[in-house]
Image (tube, rainbow, N blue to C red; front, side, top):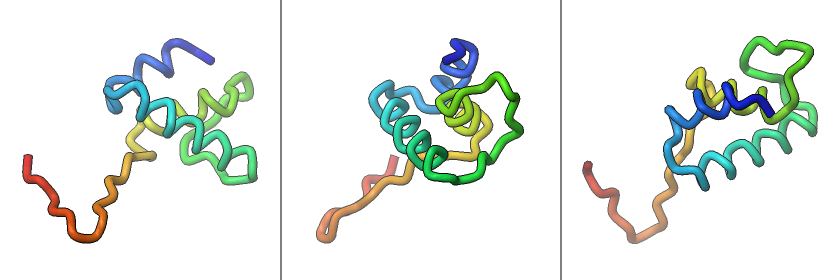
Length: 74
């Protein structure tokens, strides 16, 4: 895993646990055959691809609201 990709993705998703969860889920998707949403270098591992997608804004976190809950305005 390239530290440059980690740094760039950390600027987009500042919560480390959320970033780990997003990368983990995306790596599973890529392993299962999903196509990358960014240009891939042959030296890149699947985690680098996932981090690059996050840094490029191609992969975002979706917030779920449970029934009966209200969305808080920021």
